[in-house]
Image 1 (cartoon, rainbow, N blue to C red):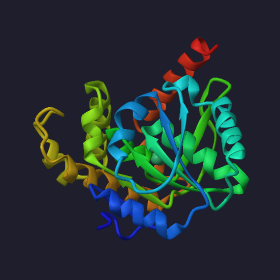
Image 2: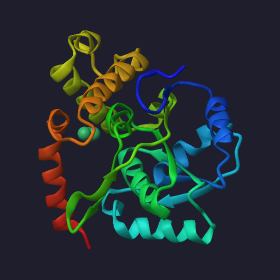
Image 3: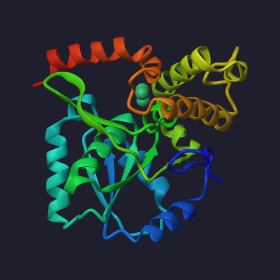
Length: 250
Ligand code: GLY
């Protein structure tokens, strides 16, 4: 069952891979591509082994410096070599970086190719995969080039979270605390007194967080007002990331 039936595209949590297989079959894509990075190739792609469709894996290296137009160009070249077209389908298997970059790659390839978000980090499951923001970094600036472009579906599994280092879980948990503080006493009740290690109801917490995100994004999809509240904590983070991109990029 879609966890958020009211938005423009379905968002699933902990459904069988047969659901994703059937959804893709119904789309009748000319080709299917799965974008991974070094980590999700090793830890997450094997969890997709029951996805019963033919696909080609495309890979970029992990790390913020690879969230670049150069990585996009490499992927666009591969897509052209593979005769991808607008009827092809792109699956983003990864965290926020893969989702943002893959969404952008798909959004402008031949003026828009369909894509599905399969977020594998806690942060991407509660934030980045939802709401249609796609982008890459440019000239040392974080997310400078991008577009608002919705996926056809968001498909999530809590089993991916078991593949994550503690630091990644902590960063997603910080976002959940932020949602609770800005929007939901109920979510606050769910997490109060908990640490990521004591939480047993991730499913409930992810659904509550995603609902908050879609409530805000639904009211202000293009970030003219209310959606800016979601940048609380990100703005300073992005400024720091931009600073380090400028000072450490080759
Ligand atoms: N991550 C903030 C937003 O989607 O608006």
